Amino acid sequence: YLGIAEGLGVPVLLPQVAHMSGAGTLVEPDSAVAAKISTFFGAPISVVLAGYESYSERLHGVAEEFTHDGTASATFLPTGSFGLRGPQWFAPEDPIHFNRSGAERMGRHMAEALLGLGLSPRTECAAAPDRW
Image (cartoon, rainbow, N blue to C red; front, side):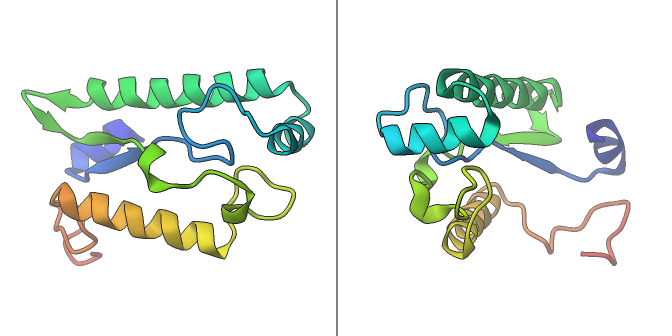
């Protein structure tokens, strides 16, 4: 996917996994949140959080693999500063999918990040300038 996008000149953003414990969290201090996550995934909270972190680290590594001579065709976006921690941002009984408030917050922060990187839906690419 990224190789095709790079070949077409389409920049790709790889966001860090946002989840109820908060991106980058390795220990969940709230026992209710820990229980909800463990129950949802059927695994101990430590395993789930380690999995999120491992996946995010791999995304970051992939973004680095798609940076050549200082130009990135894939960019890793840390999401820990987005404030998406706690059940108020997520669908009931679901520790990873946003509710409306969480989706709006994630969207707003991602839009700000895209603009900060000089990327936007109006950025033209060689492959499909009329589709943006």
